Amino acid sequence: MFGNMIFTIGLTIKQKEINMWIYNFLFYKTFLLTQKSRNFDDTPVLGGILFIILCVMLNIFTILGFFDAIGFLKSIGLKTGITFSKPYRFPFALALVVLLLFYYQYKGRYKKIIEHYEGKTGFIMRLHPLIVILIYVVSSFLLLLIVAAFKNHDWFFAP
Image (cartoon, rainbow, N blue to C red; front, side, top):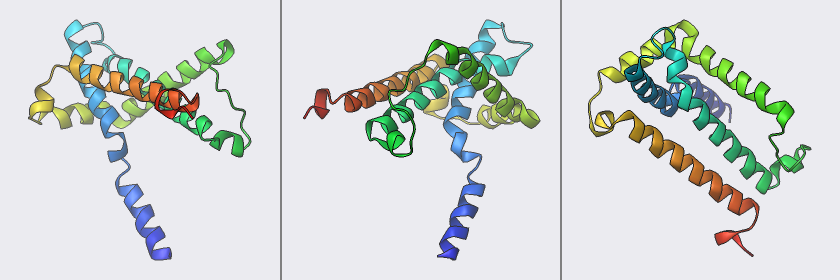
């Protein structure tokens, strides 16, 4: 029992950087896209996180919607009917921007990410940054719609 727990903890610690790989790749592609506009020369990280914020928000809403649909939130005592009411919109968005800025600025992480992907070749690396970003955003949005249909018992999930 303890051996499995130690192995799991060790695996989690070793994979800490790997868990953000999709966001790091999207950051790199967004960085390339904003680099062409030359609007973010002084703050390259801010330009790189523009679409990352949208992707993270879509994923957060998808996960919360799924937890609400299966009754998990109600079982742990949280209110259901997740809303994004006006008093919480701007603090949430600001906190997300600050959190992502901190993540990518911390010890020059964004420079390491850019260096990591600049040396790679392959089909995905040759794709235009906008295509990669659109694929991720559209697939995240479709997943959000599927979770909403599941929550409301519509479409395939109708009783």
